[in-house]
Image 1 (spheres, helix red, strand yellow):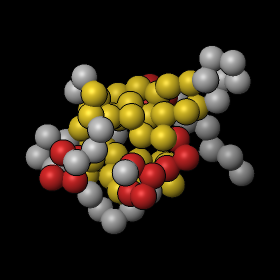
Image 2 (image 1 turned 90 degrees about the vertical axis):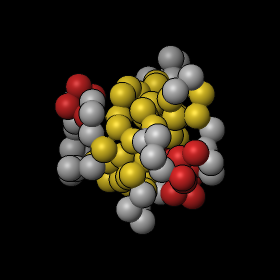
Image 3 (image 1 turned 180 degrees about the vertical axis):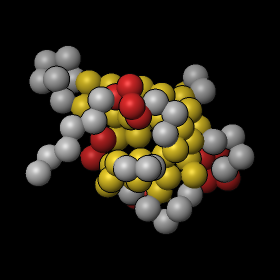
Image 4 (image 1 turned 30 degrees about the vertical axis):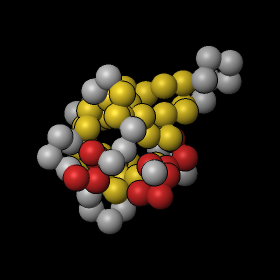
Length: 84
């Protein structure tokens, strides 16, 4: 059964990798204007993470491909491989 979540409920949720690295907090989502499908999560990066410092952070934001999202519950869990 598909669980629908309102994006507003996700704002501020911690985004972590499947191996436990805190990459930041959820800010927003990007959608494809034509299809309406979710394409990226916009994350406020964790400035203390050495892993995050290696990622492509632009204008203080990190874009995480939606395909990398593994689970949404207390945390948003993403696959680390999809971030490199």
